[in-house]
Length: 387
Image: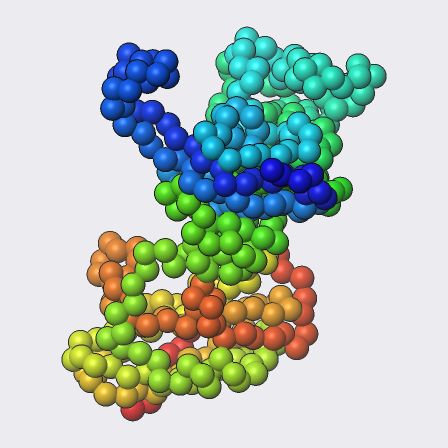
């Protein structure tokens, strides 16, 4: 029995199955005729609590059960087993197609939605104007929605649903719609909503967005909770699902690198030296990246430097003529892998890594932090092998 405490949403041993097969077989099964209709276990023994004012992240690949979990929380699906408590009716972003009459104009859509949500008429005009400005539809706001592109429709629907203050929200992949400019506006709008005390669930496969918005995350895999913890711990677990490190070439001084204190200053030189050991005759690739998870920034430096020389120990150094990072601190990740061939976007085999995603990256501290304007930065390095 769920006890109503200070939690806005509680799941207790929740299970949800879906029937597969022909429509006639499914109907027979629903009415109690056991005809062996197969089932898919969409959710298995899901348990968590969401305190007031917190947003729980749910990470998972396609088919992991994220959308099913949201729809069970929103009352669209009933659980087959277990108990659910939601303090009040939530605002759900997956209800985007609720008033899908394509003959409505953007303004008419706003009027119907706000009336459905019992917003007083005296407040609807200001909210509608807010949606018009946010969506940037301009003259199309007075046109029927059948004339909208998919991006325009996404901007309208997101603007309408988030225009009303919400205490509990259910968000399903909402930051993946629209172009990069709109995604940035959407993120700021969500931050404003959450900062006013909203709680709820954010389901996504975008770990960067989850880390930025959520302090706690669960990782779903095939309907089960595979991991539950802080946002950064969960992101590491999620990113390493299915990863394999072959150890044909390894870092020899990981402990020294992890325990050393490295500082940097934006715009000044920065260098580092490390040792690796190769157990085979072929060449290998040394790569480097810098990550600032809380700000969703990845700095891809140079992952294409090939080291040749066969078996043995190598001392490798790299140098930034001008270090590009301005944030307060960041994580340096080093990679050893099989060289890519033309046309490959990723290495076919990873030999070893010192990475934030695996929990053992190298922390760098900025001696003079500034404001960053770029989300992705690319830089070429000067590499040197010291035998």
